[in-house]
Amino acid sequence: MSRRAWLRVLRFWLPVAICAGGLAIIVITGNEDGAEGGALVISAGLSVWLLNFLYRVSVTGDREREREEDARRYYDRHGYWPDEKPARRGSSRKP
Image (cartoon, rainbow, N blue to C red; front, side, top):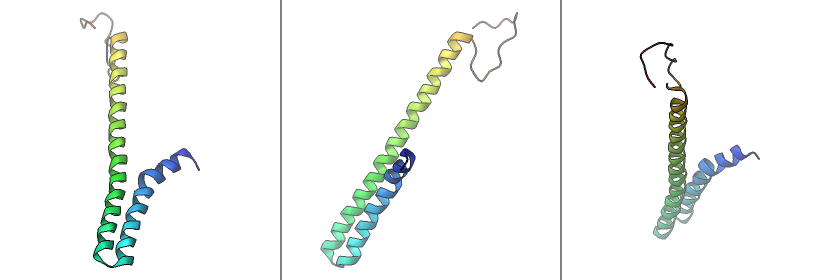
């Protein structure tokens, strides 16, 4: 299995399977103790999903900071931002 497929299993299907197990515990036992245990298992599945979500958000922030730093280095070298057109020669603009 590819790395991308393993990540999909970890990020999505593992929390779904854990929550489904919690629901199964609630349905199979049918008593108060089973309901409490099932709720705990469901909360564990939701915790796995939340940790994956928070990790993805933090990684996205790192990528944005890296792009910003690359753009600043480009500006330092060339005197204009990567998404701007270079100033014409002889203009009064100073880098």
